[in-house]
Length: 144
Image (cartoon, rainbow, N blue to C red):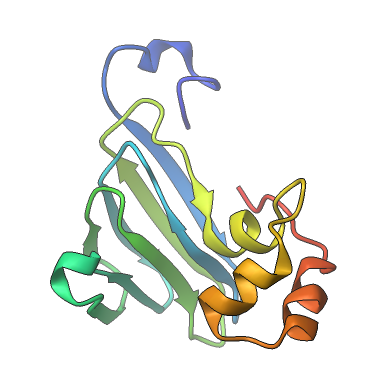
């Protein structure tokens, strides 16, 4: 719940979200440009992780979380959650901003409007132009 849903959060500097994951469900790599996130697993099993900044060699820090476990995703770091269990998982996310924002990496890069020039993406990701053009034609959606 962000300030848009609950006006009473205005100026409190916090927000909260419940996230339900189907078996195999993914909250894809994304960032919150204005917040640190604390995630607590209420049910199920999640594989979670974040990538440190370029200053720290882009190191992946990850862990499998079980009911009651907590994980912190630092401010503006790329992070994800994947339900690796055979049943649904539920987590509660607390964020250090009333308006944390979210940028889903693949959506932003391959689903921009207008599209980023495929030559740029091919070079940046070391992909063939055909692969880039295929990815740009996929149905990118806001999963938040």
